[in-house]
Image (cartoon, rainbow over the protein chains, first blue to last red):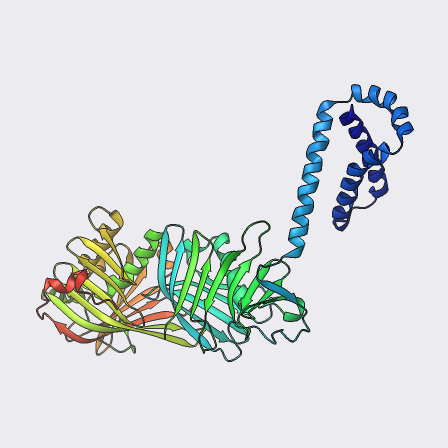
Length: 284
Length: 219
């Protein structure tokens, strides 16, 4: 008896809430709505116990209705409640984007970094030994990254001088990267977009005042979080060493690993997408 | 993809292997090619080994940049070849005793020429080219030019896929000794790779050991 009755109460309140929010379609209200719903479902039967007469009065009609209530519907609502609860956990986690060992600081905080950098303002050009793995295919050679005419140019080629690809990234981030050349056998959308996106991460850094900043409690290294999606790990001076992708309920995924000494560009660049990886080691 | 990659690189390397000098001016086309053909074949026949250093210049026109690589080239009849880069990176290709070996970053990759159709084809091309018989190569259309000092063989790829990467291959021969002085690989879009040969030793004794991977110095 209790279960069907609870179900009945829940259903009534579900309808009320539907009515109250029927005009609201903004996703921002969804978590709030779910919380209210769960609270009501949990507490209403308890509150009803306070009113013995109401319970007894309802019992007969409720019994009749519940007797014919579809048991499948009950299961359906139980499942729904589980999904709502899971959604709340997900939404809470997704919006928090916290990192163990780091604490958030405000952008105006003294702990903050003035600039972040990978290729700094003095950068002109760099030559890298290159190792590209695309599934079972291994391509090796040399890559030159050069600043030219308000743009960064990335040209990769084999040891024998055969070009693999030639991309241009304009300083103006709004302009799409230009593919000047890509070897026919490499000209796949997946790969082209990956190269554009990954080098875009290296050349177009997030603005500090538009990012969430976190400081390591021990070594004072920093993390910049861009749009709750990308994590830029930097040292205390603002030199980026790792770029990670934020993942809900999963460890953050490292996309780019960099190492740098005193020069104006990274010594090594490792771009890792599992079966596709690009590794660059500076040629002195 | 892998096959094309090796194929294109092999082309660069085959035509670098053809033998050895010149100036790029006032060339006129040669219509009667029998003479130059026989000269090439005669020279090839009399060449049993080559030892040379090379300088490879990759000209990136849009970047105003020239990337320079240096290395060594060895050839011994019938078809043992070693093409080794020493700077700025270490990278070696060896063809010897039916094996096609690539040494890169301490990693050795070996391919059996006979069991792999692609490497068999590459091997055939090398043998043909070294014999001076690339004029009849079906993969290229050849045109010949000359000036007072040199012959110039201008090869245009017939394969559409290759022509996307290579517009022409220009091989410059010294008229007096028929040795290859330089090779220019021109790509679509004005970029080109120039390979010049220096310190040539023709028909000096070359031991087979020089073509063994264990003898290739790896840093």
